[in-house]
Length: 166
Image: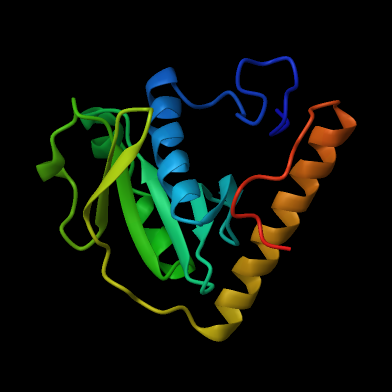
């Protein structure tokens, strides 16, 4: 399924996320936009895995956010430790009905209600090697550009947003 579906309720969603996961994601997106981070959802990594959210700060720091919509979602998913090799900081994001204490202490933690999110625990930093950073920045920028092109060709109107740098 393509990442952009102009007829879907969420045209940039690929259909694999639950409504609850999309709410968590939207709250994190609003927080990151407010804080000046650029975000690409569902970015495919070099391993073939897809990170829920990859963000780049103004300083070039790369963050990955793994969205968890339930206790079961966290317990059955054991691929997230692989994401550390592709980011400077790794976070989990969830909603208030999932207990915070199930998430590992060595990752950051975001709590989202769909309208916004709050950083409850900062993620420890583990700086990427330069060659990995270059590969991630290329993957990030190419995915963003391809999606913008697909959105334009699909007739989705996109306007510049506040904080977008020239």
